[in-house]
Amino acid sequence: MDLENIKKIYMIGIKGVGMTMLAQFLASKGYNVSGSDVDEVFMTDEVLKTAGIKFYNGFNKNNVPLDTDLVIYSTAHEKNNKELEFVKSRNKKIMTYAEALGVVFKDYYGIAVCGSHGKTTTTAWLAYVLKKANREPNAMIGARVEQLDGASIIGSSQYLIIEADEYQNKLKYLESRAVLLNNIDYDHPDFFPTEDDYNQVFIEFIKKIPKKGWVVANFDDPIIRKIALVNTRAKVISYAINESADYVAYDIKQLNDKQYFKVKIGPSVFEENDLLADTELGNFSIQLIGEHNIYNALAVIAASIELGVDLVDIRTYLDEFKGTSRRMEMMGKFNGAVILDDYAHHPTEIKTTLKGARQKYGNKKIRVVFHPHTFTRTKALFDNFAKSFDDADEVVVLDIYGSAREEHGGVHSRDLVEKIKSQIPTSLKLRGASTNQKLKIHHIPTLDKCEKYLRGTIQRDEVIILMGAGDVFRIGEKLVK
Image (cartoon, rainbow, N blue to C red; front, side):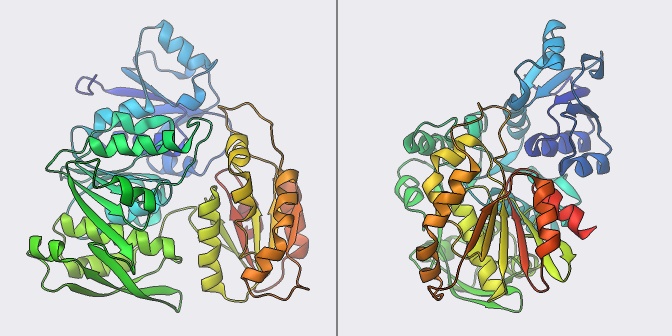
C-alpha cells in the first residue's frame, strides 16, 4: 500500500509517542488527520493540540469519519476495540503504526536511530543540528522537543530521521539508508523471550542497509562491536570514549552545568572527508548531563560529518541543544527544591541518569520517585532494578504501571522495595558513605499519596527526580503549579 491516493487518515491510539510523531508528520504533509485514544491526559495531548489535530477521548465507532481513506492503529489497542471492529466491517484500508511508518520511510533517504537507550535524544539532536545548519531535514521524534516546536519537523530535503523502535520487531518494516546504533541492552521481555531473540532484531536490521549506506555504531557496546562489522555491507563508522574507534571522545569535564570534551578521529575518517583538516576535531560542549549524552553527542557528530555538515556548525548547534521532554526535564521548583522529570524505565537508564545527576548536583540530597513500567519488565529485570539506585539518597517506589497488552501480576512494587533494601550496604560503600548512613527506601502505592508525602517533606535545595515511562510526571505538575 502507498499513500498516493490517501487524503483522510484516522489513527486509533493517537496519543502514543510513536503515533503522535507520525500524526504530526502526516498532518504537516497535508493529510487530514484525526484520531482517538483512551480518556486520559497524556504528555502528547499538547503536541496534538498545537498541531491542530483533532482527537477523541475514548473509543466509539461514531468517532470514525465515514469518508476515511486509511486507518492506522496502535497494536496496544487492537483487542476488543469498537472502532477497529467497525472499520474492519466497512472494509476500510488498515495499517498498523509500524507498517505505516515503513511506507512513509521508504520514500526518503531514511536515517534510523535505534538501540535500547538514547533514541529520542539522539534523533532530536541530529534533527536539530541539521535543521539549524540549513539542511532542511524531515524528522519524527518520540517526544516533544521545545526547540523544534513538536515531535516532528518538515523540510524540503530527502533526509528523514526517525526514532526507530525495536519493540514487536517494528524494525522489520523499515528500509534504511543509514542507521545510528546506540546500544543493545535486553528489554521488552514480554515480546523477546531471550537476549538472543532481542539481539537478532538489530542484526537483521543492519543486514538490510545497502552497500552504499552507512551505520554509526557505538563500539564501547560489546554486542555492537561484535556484530556490526560482520553483519552489514554498509560502511561502519565507530565511536567510543577513551577507546580505539573512528570518533573518540576524551578529556571529559563537568563545569557550570555543561559537559566539555575533546574529539579525535581515526585515519579512515580523515582520509575520506574533505571537510576535515585535522585528526583532532577540537573542543566540544553540551548542555546535557551524564556520560550517556557524550555517547549520544558522538553519534550526532559522526552522522553530521557523514552528511557533509560543516564542523563549525556541528560544534555550535550541538551545544545549543537543550534536550527533549521527559529526559531530565526541569519542571520547576517546590519549596526551593528542583523538580525533574525523566523517562528512564530500564535499569541501565536509571543507573546512568542518576550517575549524571550526582555529577551535576554533587552532595545535594537526591530523592527519586520511581514508577515501574510493566509487570513483565519489572519481573524479568528485577535484580538489575534493585542495583540501579546507588546514587540516590531516597527512593520511593510506586505501584507498577501495567501495559495494556499484558496480564497483570507476578511481581509487586513491595517486592522491589525489599530487594533494593538488601542492596543498601553495597550502595553506600560505592558512594564512600559512612556505614551509619541510611538510604531511605519505601513503597507508596499511588500518585496522590506520593504527592501528599512530598508536599510534607520536601526541603530547600533537594533534587526530586520523578522517573518512569508512565504518568509519574503528574506529581510534578501538581507540585509546581
